[in-house]
Each structure stands twice: as structure tokens, then as C-alpha cells.
Length: 168
Image (spheres, helix red, strand yellow):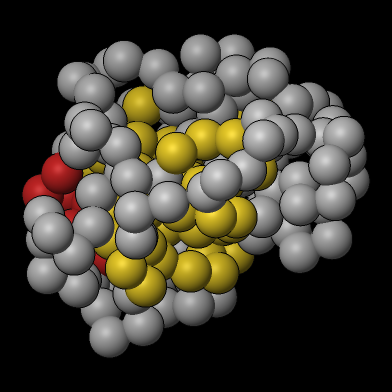
């Protein structure tokens, strides 16, 4: 582990010598991630992208990609687009990236089960804004808005989210 890794601990996310309170999946941590289990997967997951709502925030980094109306994420393990960004109209199971609430105003994408997804092994693990302190996610890691923005301005493609089995 390096100071440039995002390291999950039982009480916070550690990055660049700072600690940030965070929330994880309602299913806790798992080494056997499945679609819909609500768990945050163990392992080292590289940051592969950054999405943001251009109608709500400025781009936090020059490599951030705007979330457009109609941008979705496929979470249908029976479809070829499983665990990929897709566009509406999309008749299969999906998650809307352009949400009414602020949870996905800024999203760091990880390489969990990507780019060649194993069907049923769990779709995207994002780092995004939390609903409120301690409120669990569907498997993602969530942070306070200002903390997420601070981190997003400093991560690079390839920064790792480390979710260790033995919590440091």
C-alpha cells in the first residue's frame, strides 16, 4: 500500500495521509461478491474513470467525463452490456446515472468485474457521495461531498481502492 492508495479501514477511508469517514455496502465486506448482495468486495480495485454532473458541479479533474441525460449503467447479468455504461432507452435492468438526488453528482469508477464482466459477479463498484453519515450503500464506498471532491481532485487513473480482508 502507498499513500496514494485509497485504503478502507473499519472507520474511514485513508488517502494521502488523511482520514475520511465513509460508508460501505449494507452487506458488509465479501470475498465472494454476487449481483444484488449489497456487499463491498475485498481486493485492490483500480480507479478507471470519473463521471460528474456538469449541470451541478465543475469538472473535478481534466479527465472527468460528464454524465449526460440518458446515461445508465447496466446491472443485468443476462445481457451482453452487463456492468457497462449504456444509453437510454435500455430495456434491461439498469441504474440511472443522472439521478434526481446528489449521490452520483461525482462518481469514481473502479475496475471491479470490468472490463470483461463475469455475469452475476456484481456490477459496478463506485465511490460516490453518501446519503448521510453511516447510511449503507448497495456495495459502493460513499463519502461526504466535500471529501469526495477533495479526493477526486487528487486521484489519477490507476489509483487503487484497497479493501483488505484484515482491516488495518
